[in-house]
Amino acid sequence: MRAFSPEPRILPRPLLAGHGSGIELLDHDAVPGLPGGGGAPGSMLLLHGFGGDKAQLRPVGDALCPQGSVAVYPSLRAHGASHRPAWGYSVLDFAADLHRFGDALPGDLHLVGYSYGGLVAAVSAVTWGASRVRSLVVVDQSFDAHPDLHVADEWAEGSLLRWTYDFGHLPDLLERLGIPVLVLAAAGSRNILADEQERLSRRDSASLRLEIIHGSHADCYRNTGEITSAMRVFYRDHFSAVRKEQENS
Image 1: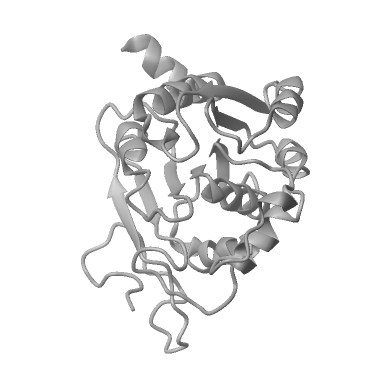
Image 2: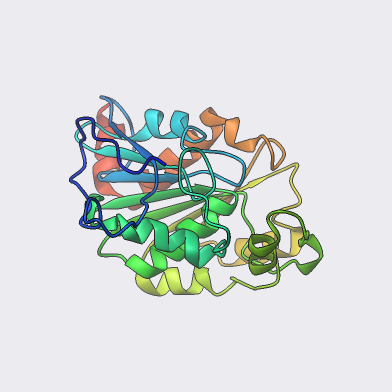
């Protein structure tokens, strides 16, 4: 089982790594930002959805992570080369995995999450607060409870603990913390239903913005150009350094 690679790294070694404790940390890639990335100042933590892995959002990070920063792509538990415990699949378990190597992550983080990864990112942002997390982008993930979507399959625990609980309070907490949020809802998806879209639209303000992107829930994350375009505008409106860079380009 792979934890953190012994190859040369750009992140410091997490405190929990190599202590003989048997704790398995998430497999990840850490990729330096590129010149002309066009993202906000700070590094990025990008979280895939169920069935994906650390490569799923790599095109988004490659397009936006600025030079001098780093984009971190973990494979969540039971995905990719990360550990696969028999149980422990609530959003809190996934967020705790990130917390276990959080000391190795840069101080100023922009979180991006697709599908279930968006909910994990939101919980992590609330946990870490504005001193670590500068912004949050959620790609086609509902905050509402939808018990009818629970399926008793091999992911029964995660499905039950996700769909039978309402996470609609998270936007309020993020606003109180001063963490701006961009929600991207896929036009062909039924993940964020019309009533939730209406509620999110009504609170559209400096703290939360809702945008509609093309695609279904299954494929919207592939719309890299549309996603990164919306994120650039979002970053420009919240971070003066991005505005200056775009004005001078």
